[in-house]
Image 1 (tube, helix red, strand yellow):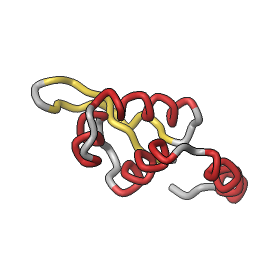
Image 2 (cartoon, rainbow, N blue to C red):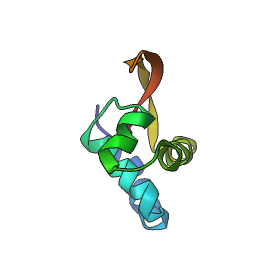
Image 3 (spheres, rainbow, N blue to C red):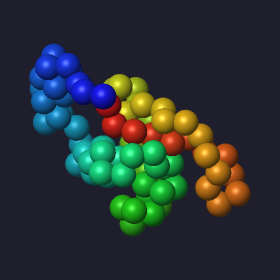
Length: 83
């Protein structure tokens, strides 16, 4: 899937306004598609609560989207991918 030129332009305009933590989460999701919050937090070396808020914010900004559910550590979790 490719991004439209207008989407890329919009992202480039928004990118400087992302906090450092949001940007770290977004970059990690881009590099590792289909991760849940727990996996993102583990990968970044963060506590889960630090990560889940950033995931919610990025989702509301439409920079990441739901990528299905799967079992992680015996729980059904939501996974995310970058747009």
